Length: 140
Image (cartoon, rainbow, N blue to C red; front, side, top):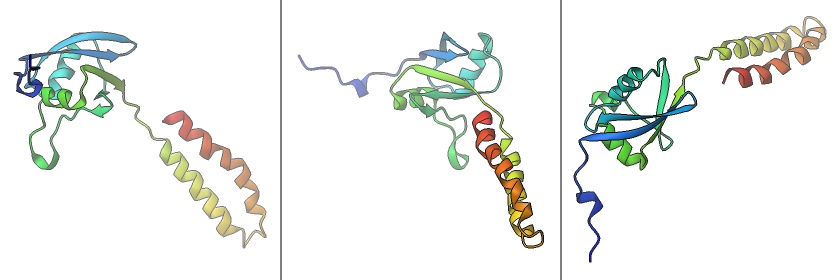
């Protein structure tokens, strides 16, 4: 008996997705033809609030299309990912890069001023270097 052609099977009208957010897994049903924003609304209805990043199978779910085109439907994106498990990770709004740039600027100024200070301005660099390595680990 020949196996049925998987690509010829009709796409379901409703997608049942398993969404892992905040340490718990929720089952959400959304229309297959809906955009990814419909999944956000369904999650908000189930109590998952806030700004979070949606990914299925390691691929981000796009809410907007590229170059002004319409975004692919949620069903297309889930089929391309090959899984029905979606991960909702909270977005971390960084800002530590400005501190790192400031520290790098201070180090650069210390190098430039070392000519005028006979090298004594270079004494602050060992105290600034640990912050360059610690701050990105805390903020990312």
